Image 1 (cartoon, rainbow, N blue to C red):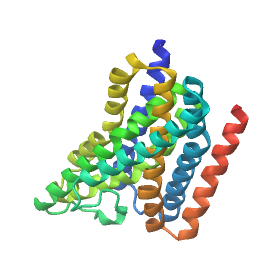
Image 2: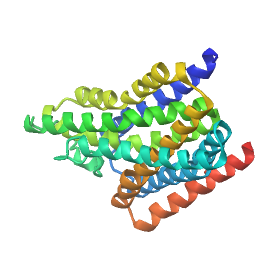
Image 3: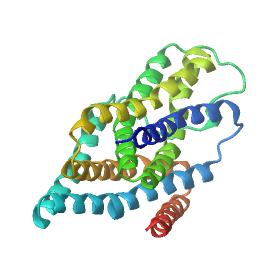
Length: 269
């Protein structure tokens, strides 16, 4: 595997993770939350991820595993790997701190124009939210990286979708830490740190999986990634999209995301 085949997927994963910093910056410099745009964008991100998971990743995994074994075994392993991905992210979701929902919708208006008085108790909430989001971002980094290694165009689409959904997560980390410390720089840094879990996940995938990579292993990974992304979409993106705006706007985003992804796959076919 050449240097470019590794470097580009790593850069895509880094870019997706750094989107939490974009959310933090928006929280501090924008005057109001464009809820309709955010709702549409999150829906679009979910639509892209769901479509890619079922139409592309699941299909590619089944082909790889059927070639490595036989059609029946390949199909069975694809299904098992898909639900293993759902189980993995589901376990992570249950193990992270539950007292504060890291994906709860937050608005820019929650930050006042003036420096707030420090509320030290909120620091724990902010740090634990950053930790929770970091843990969730870890498998997302693996998903972006492995998809980009298999198909760079697919990796770009997934990285973009994950970056969109990382923006409100950056807001979710920044707000409680800002109110805990009154320090915008510290809030921005914690937000950035939570997003850096994604390239860490990519590096771990490269270090642990690439030396043993085979057609069968890549098939299993793609199916696991599909399961992870379907769970993220249903559990995080679509509920958050509905919270930020009207239900129909989020659905329009989902359908648009699916249509855009379908068109791009057809053009690249």
